[in-house]
Image (cartoon, rainbow, N blue to C red; front, side):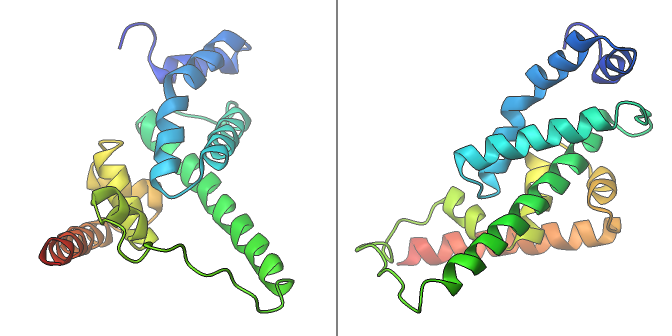
Length: 178
């Protein structure tokens, strides 16, 4: 990376340099949107989650201290934005189901036979495993950094990764046998 580090940009943004914060957004926006998409958020929702993450980051300008890697800090804010998005979606579904009077659309023809690939397997993976996999693979965080981002012990991170990898193997193997 050329130019100032993300921590330096945060310091500059804290002192009122708007272009420094704009550079942080430019550096990380695409990766955040992609991350939210892999977590199962639709395109518009992923953009909203990324924007929410940057709003949270902006609110933290005064209190940010570069103790942990900036990427881990940003991941923690992104996780909070994603959790809020999931909660909103859950509430909206509950409201719409309550007004649907028991009528549900039939599944699209052929949906059951839809090809299972790694992306589909990840999309259907339990959220607590998916978070660990994506933070490790996409963000390149160590187990200790993932532990800090998620607020869970490093041993829990390791066990979630173990079960996630096993789950992926079994899901992909089951599909290849069919």
